[in-house]
Image 1 (cartoon, rainbow, N blue to C red):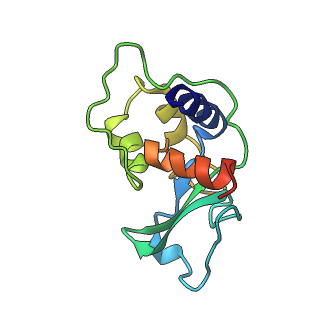
Image 2: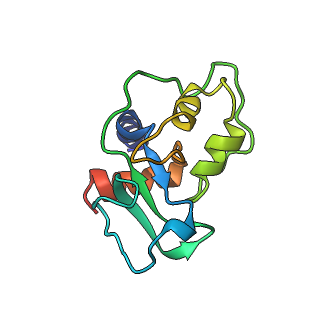
Length: 140
């Protein structure tokens, strides 16, 4: 079972590795507009997570709709990744701090990406990735 889950996660990573983002500018958000799971969100991606209200500058997480061109390694072979976290809401910090630099090619590509006019896309934490699998891949 664990092997099967890892294969599924690897498949999802292949599809959306470079495509997770959230609305990080609360002042640009319209609090009266709500987005449902599996609908297009404020950045133009598919909403896979809604924490229910705006806090810490964001409410929704989205996965971009298309595959990123190219193949990117998660990290260089001998690179440690201390300081990464697994919970929802930590993918951004993982990508922009713990995985900063060229030793994490996938994170580097994400930091340079622009989709839907947004530049705050990031590699999902493991629990964010599980939400993608649960709410987009499995359909809720």
